[in-house]
View 1 (tube, rainbow, N blue to C red):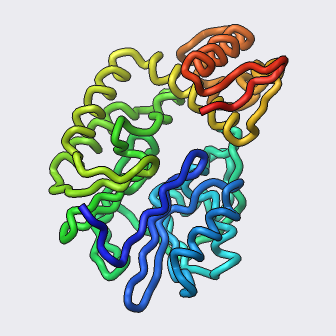
View 2 (spheres, rainbow, N blue to C red; view 1 turned 135 degrees about the horizontal axis):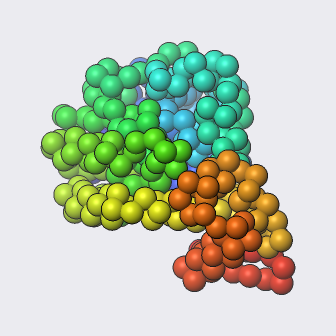
Length: 302
């Protein structure tokens, strides 16, 4: 399925989320802005896609660091109107890095501002197309997805990937997330979808197959919450490794104890001494080909 002529997907590799550029008759827009350390690349990619036009509007599906880390750079470059999920407005206004999860994950995000908000039930025009704003709690309690009925396109953020979905973070803090993830998938299943643009990975057309995979995964995780915690610890360490490329093996236990979500997942579900948890996590990444050991260093791979 081809994209409308007013849309372009910038498929990014980790650490950054995908970016969706809209070039309408009168206004341009961007959905999600990638990670902080990729901001120079984001600026270059967006400028190339805009072909000399200014960026009028920036919209965030949710405020995890890999989806909004380029906000500040884009605001400085374009003075663009910025729209965020309404439920996050107070946290951004106060710049509460704990509530925004940046401190909890050990990730970076430059401070940005916003001009307005969107919430489930709203409508928004992007690229001369009308988009429905839908709530997609689960991976993030306040995440939004965007659906264009006329073009049968879903911008699914981290609520649905071709082979799953993002880590269910609320469950790590003992809050409900499995039920919300399932409800979001059930909502997506009611939509007439011809193309899904996920937060990570290539756009895909077989939404039914992806939903079947996602439902199977949520069944697997919900059956034993330890599985979600183990996955989260691996994902969080891999994210840090992607950012830093090399981490001293001796520093990994300290990271697992100092970064709150590591410590919370361990205390609530895994119950392992930090050195043992570090050894297990490193072993999992190495066996998966996502990391290698070089002397006393854990090195990014894959």
